[in-house]
Image (cartoon, rainbow, N blue to C red; front, top):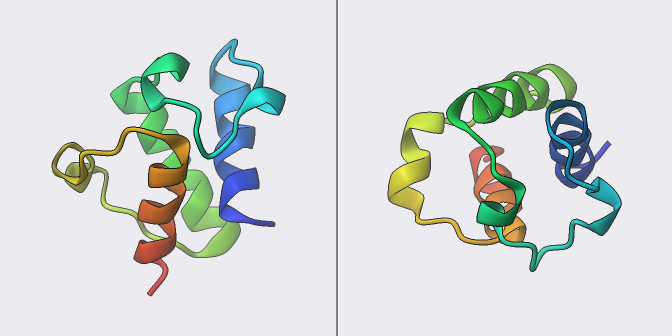
Length: 78
């Protein structure tokens, strides 16, 4: 399972957003994620892929698109 799949599955469970329409260009602000959503994504990434993201670093990362978020998660892998 990829980072994109894990993140999109969690978004689909937590929001009304049509995850089939999510692309790397989708604006994070359009999905209306709240801080607890990011914690749920954090837990799922750890459980499914063994990736530990630091949600406290998200505000400073200045992420705008889902592609930016996927990249942020991918960088946490190393």
